Image (cartoon, rainbow, N blue to C red; front, side):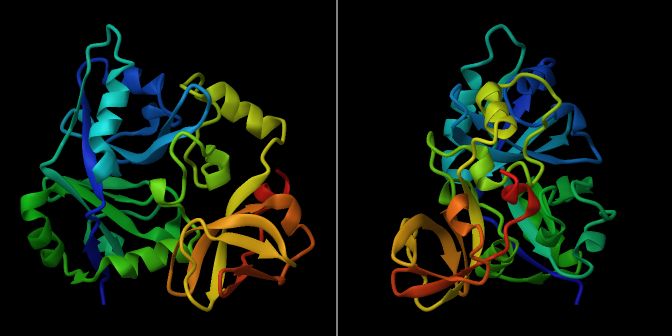
Amino acid sequence: MVGTWTMLDGRGAVRVAGPDARDFLQRVITQDVELVGPARAAWGALLTPQGKFLHEFFLVEHDGALLLDGEAARCADLAQRLSRYRLRAQVEVSPEPAFAVAAAWGDGAAAALGLPAGRGAASPFAGGIAFNDPRCEGLGTRVLAPRGGLHTAMAAAGLTGGDHAGWDSLRLANAVPDGSRDLEIDKSVLLEANFDLLDGIDWAKGCYIGQEVTARTRYRGLLKRRLIGVAIDGPVPAPGTPVTLDGREIGEMRSAAGRRGLALLRLDALVGTAGSSLCAGEARLLADALPMAARES
């Protein structure tokens, strides 16, 4: 089987165009926009001046503009917030409702879409662009293209239709956050959601909105919590359900499905507890091992 694909109806597009588009985004978002081109996509975020999460999105270049693959229900808000920083820049920011987002995964999916190996590799497809997920190799590929011909193009590539639950299971298996399902708007900091481990922040690009707080959190070791993948034994806990260890609350659940989920957990509470059983509602949880960067936070 070449691979499986599904529409990501919860995602949409924002178009940033004009002669100053790149310079404009470069001084606003967490990612180095100069890395983005016809053959490469990237992932980044927009923060408050206090370094709190507002939006996450993928960046691709298409037809002389930059397209942002973000949460569909919040595309208008993303466009509006970006527009506040235009000042005198020659740039236009607007939702792009004609474009839709799809995901494909499994052996051969990238090749079926004309993509070489490597995170973030991009190539034209179906009047839009296909790209390997820049966050994690295990997440397969994405397509941002005009809505009208997307189903036909994916079928012509030999991909088998799947459902969003299959994609969500893959995401959770790789412990990758999903926008405001896993981050609290105007409250979360990016390092809590592992943006530093998933290449969502460029530490060398220079200033962006919220940069000072984000860098200080990293270099001073101020991070106290991280999103950690958990295996679930029992009923799936709702987001916000407290997570306890030996009766002590050490965090809370975020998104989950089936036997996998994400939990925002205190790092100090997890030290020396490898293999320990946590509780969330009526379920027992087994936390994944902390990545090395998390152990050093």
